[in-house]
Image (tube, rainbow, N blue to C red; front, side):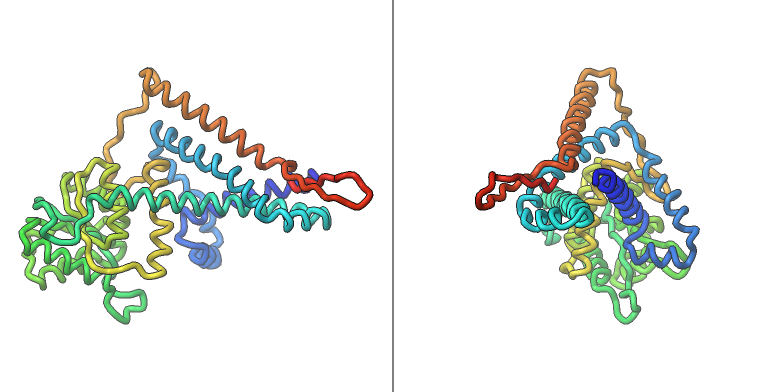
Length: 364
């Protein structure tokens, strides 16, 4: 039985690592599946591409990673205990039926606890980013302090089926034109995706803003704004701008302002019209925790250009030495609790039988 549980444990963690790789490198499982069918060799390309996520990690990222890992490791035993107590009868039934169902129950229990940890991390990331951005958000031009530059974040001009214009795009164009005509900004940086000759977000934005009376000489184009992170980082390290008004919908501005804070850019957000659809809600729910991982764990850089390197983490200073030792101790303690939650013993239930002594049954 223990050997079977051990094998299932190995399989479980290998499957988890594979799932994380797919989610990091691809947008979703459907894209991975289609890529795999089209060219099975691309699986190895995905694994190779994953290395790029660790290229720019420095000492600070390792400290941040240890802190985040400690938080997740501490959350797992708590969720594990809740799942175990909440569904105790169900797991007891599986445990008492056969060895196979007992092992299945163990796997379900751990997977449920892990899923709760992932959901909670996403929820915490969304709350932290939303709250941190709130003081910098502005809905009316009268509330905006005049600045030299605005950054307009790109979007696809039309919907995916090309049947109609994308309202998110239209509202951002209208907001940018309004901001310019009100005299709050003198130049607008148009940052968007231009990954092939037939798709050019910055050029689309330029044409539509010129139709609304914004002079061509006041429009600067950034063709390498493939992601929000690229747009924000390039704003400072390619255009030399560190004081800006960012234009987009509120849910998008929250991420952009959080990134601006991290890269020491003084930014205000001008909210364009447009509420979240269900598909956009799902996208943002994952985009915000990915933003946290991108900057604190992987130190991700734009596809073209990169941020200036940070001051190295020097262990010779007493402050940094204390920080690193504290983080290592925290990681060791939370790892111990995590390992304890993976043991095969733990929850016991008394079963009284007529004429017999109390018996105790373990369900791990």
